[in-house]
Length: 132
Image 1: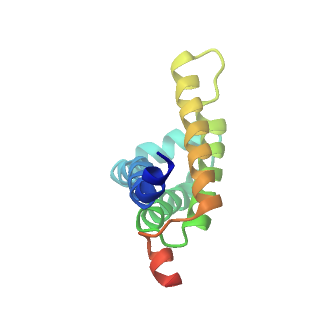
Image 2 (image 1 turned 135 degrees about the horizontal axis):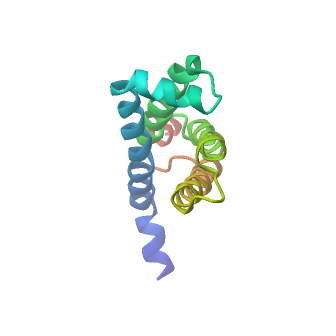
């Protein structure tokens, strides 16, 4: 059984990168499309709206790098930190069950991203192809 998992490992890595990056790509594009609303929401939380371009850059840039497996460890670490920060600033509301579920989702995403920070993008990544 172990041999089967070892052979499938590069495919699991690609699938995980695709699935992990999609949430950030979609969220980043939504922020671009609703820029003023997102900026106002950030300000209502006490987060400077001027940080929105940086948020979009991290979400889109980091997720595209993760998707392609380019500088995978750095991109994953950046996105993990972003997930923890956003989860804490935006979704940590112990009295609100829905927000706490989203907060826990952010924690889970950070955990998965930390595995990419540890193990990299795998064989089918730009990082893997550059090593060859």
